[in-house]
Image (cartoon, rainbow, N blue to C red; front, side, top):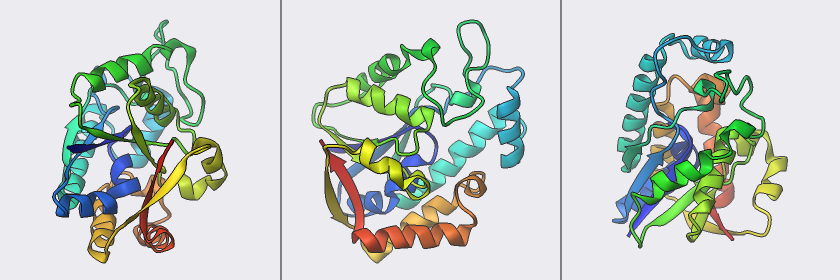
Length: 240
C-alpha cells in the first residue's frame, strides 16, 4: 500500500505534511509525492505577472526556475524520505487561454472558464498511475489558490477514498477559509515525533527560492511549523 500525497506545486505536500511523511516512511510506509503543476513552459515570453514572480524568486528563465525548483524538491523529498513523481502540467502563471492570452495575473481567483476541462485531464493522468490499494491524500485548497482548487477538483473526480491535508502556509494566513473547505469532514490526529518536526522544518528550508514568498523569514517558518505541531500533537488529516 502506497500513500500518495498529491501536491499542486513543488513544495505544497512537504510544507503541509512533511513531518507526518517523515514518520510514515520511518515506520515502513511507502510514500510518494506527486507534483502536478511543475511542467516546463514552452520557450518564449512570459506574462508580466510571471516576470514579477521570477524577479522575486531571483531566476529570470522559466526553464531554469523549474529545474531549480525540482532540485529543491528532490532535496526536500530526500530529507523526509518520500519518492518524488513529477507531472507536466503548467503552473497557472504560465498558462494561456484559447485565444492565446495569459489566463492569470493573480493566483487567488477562481479557475478560468477556458480551463473547464483541466481537472478531468489531470484526473486521467493521475488515474493511469494509480494502484487499487493506494491511499490518496489531497490538499483542502485553504487559501483558494487557483491551482489548489483545480487540483482538488481533479482528485475528487477520481471518486476514490480521500484524505485531505490543510494547505500551509495558507492555513496560517487565511484561517477563516478552513471551515468552508473542510465542511462536513472529520479531523484525524497523527502523532509526529521531534525527529519528524526537525525533518519537516529542514525540508521546507530547502525551498530557498520560495521561502521569502511564503514566510517572513526562515526563523518565522520554523516557529510557525513548531506551533502547528505543538497544537496538534503532530499533524492532522481530514476525511469526508
